[in-house]
Length: 212
Image 1 (tube, rainbow, N blue to C red):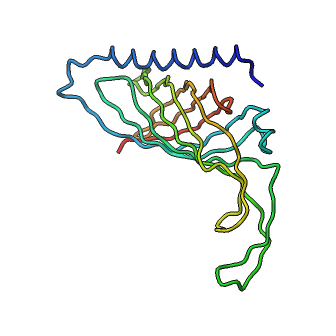
Image 2 (image 1 turned 30 degrees about the horizontal axis):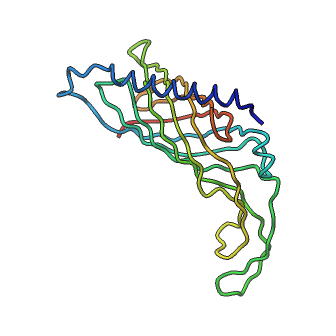
């Protein structure tokens, strides 16, 4: 278990990071707001997620998982800051799977099926994206974020009346640091997320994005 002092320090750091992002937004130049270029970009990603060991063990799952997801990111030429809203599907590595006999809709076939352990994660991130290098093709991302985990359970897929169990894993506040490169019309990036609250420790994300 994490100590209360460490927990408080992490919350304080997360709060500071988010306020720094807001301060950066407030200080962004707006003298050319009438000619601002704004829009949305899309992204797809795959994550390697690390959970708090004690939290994972209490729920019968391994302390690592894989997640795949996507996000939409709002940007403006008047600011370095961007807002990202996204969703993940978490695939737990389950140590407490169960099996059950199930029948099809007409009751003709009976099969033995084993459970899966999955969840959905919603997240929001805000902070600056600084470009540098030749033709500004390289960038660094610094953000504060918050996530929530929904429909977290082990259950039989596509079964309406089967047994299921909740997997109680919480999201939380986190910070993001990343680096990437623009390749034509696409951005390829690698991001590290450090959690300060909740049951996740950190995650590593490989991300591909582009404007639309």
